[in-house]
Structure formats: structure tokens, C-alpha cells
Length: 350
Image (cartoon, rainbow, N blue to C red):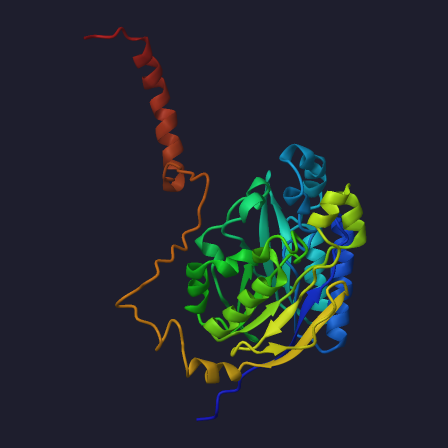
């Protein structure tokens, strides 16, 4: 038998600021970054959490009443799956022959969701998912996903999965992904600009460590894009010195990690926009799995097991009367109407 051929490919993690609260402007920038990546031989490019149209930082800076000034604009510039704007990104993926992991704020009817899409190099959306649980004050903006959103997709370039931000601190969600033989993980982050020096848990050291540990625990490659906060974003939201201290300009710490946790690619300065690029070989995964496969030979399902409910949660379930073939149902209804009318005219007999 011939030896198994493991895909080798070049991947990129985006580090940049969106055109904040501007759907079309951010899509233009998205397509430009895709073109830059494709020109450097990149096969998979990953964008940060809520890249389109940017992360709603105001929810961390002041009261909900103060933040209402941004709400309508944020809704109006969120991305609708299947829209003309969404199709622009799909077409660009096809044009540049590149896979895209896109982070975006999804508008669905009257609600918003922290979402990620995986688009193949032919322009087909092979997966869309939502963050299962928005973190802390994110719950004032976004709804929740469900078990369908913990899924790894088998593709010609490897088994690809995605999570957003502090989903990487949820042990059971991570284990659900590991157990699906994930090989390339797209871990999207919004920026590490918030409460620097005051809240270590929100900073780059801990959260990049979460991405690194994910790679070592799951024995997979982790592509971890991270946005930046631009000066224009700061001027819009940080209207006083106190807010400027709470949300710094910069905060970009995009990274790529190998299955043994080692860093790949060349990091950028935190206020620098660009791509962190690395060449990966999925054959490396076997070397790490040989030591500790968390859901395989290194697991103890007789001691601990995970229940993963992938049932799609629907707010409305429609029930309809069964159809009768040949129009017989309609005929029965029509025939019964005169009798029903006559019955209604009869006096009630006890």
C-alpha cells in the first residue's frame, strides 16, 4: 500500500483593525488581505473574532445606556449569511483560490451572534457557526449558539474546527473538538487591548497561552488571528482619559502554534497590521498524538465521558396536518362543510 500523503500548506493569521462599524469598508479590507495572502502562497487565512464590522468595545467602557448610541449602527453593519456582502467574500475566495475562516457579527432576524464561517477555495461556505456562550457583557449584545456549533469539518486540506475567544477556556467544548480529530484549529480573538495591567485574564499572556495549550492538548495546528484597536476606533469610543486607559490602541497578538505547542511564524508588533504566516505539515500531528491523544489512547472513557448534544435548537417547531394524496383531503373537507353547518343550527341536547 502507498504511504499516506499528509497535506502541507501555508496558513496566515490576520492582525489588523477593521474599518470599524463599516460593513462594506471592512469587506473591502478583507478582500485586500485575502489577495495579499494568496500572493504569498497562503492556502488558509483566518480573521479575528467579529472582524466584520468590529468588536463592540463600548460594552466594556460604560453603562448600557451610554452604549445605546452604537447599537443601531452595529446592527446595520453586521453581516447576514447569504447576503450580497457575504457573497462578495465567497467570490473573492474563489477568485484567489484560498480558504477563509471569517469572524463576524452575524445578523439573523432581530438578533446578533458572534459567528465564524469557513469558506473553501471554490467560494462555498462549508460551515457557519456561532459562539456557544457570549462572555460576560457580550451577553448584552449577542445571542447563543448550540451543540451544532461544536463541529469539525473534514476538508481536502485537513479537518478544520473553529472557536472564538474564551471558548478556549471551556474544557468540555475543547474536548468536544479534540474528539472529532481536529487537525487545524482557527481560534479567533478580538484584540488584547482591554484593561491592560488591571485584568491579567484579559491580556495577551494568558490568552495566547490558551491558544498554545489548545495546540498541545489537542495535538493540532492553531491559527490564532487577533485584531488591533486603531486610533480611529479609540477616538470614537474613548471619549475621555479614563476610557483611553481602559482600551488601548494596538493589542494585536496574532499567533500560530504547532501540535507540540511550539510557536510558528514571525509575530508582529502589537500595533502593526499584517499577516503572521507559517508553513504547516499535518504529518507532524502523528508525532504528538503518539505521546498523548486526549480522546484516544490517552483517554479513560470508563472514568469520564462527555455528552455532546448536537441537536439544533429551534425557537419555533411547526406541526402540520398530514397531507392526503390525490386531493382527497380537500374533498372530505368540502363534503363535510354542509353537514357541519346543519349541525351547528341544531339545538344542543343534554
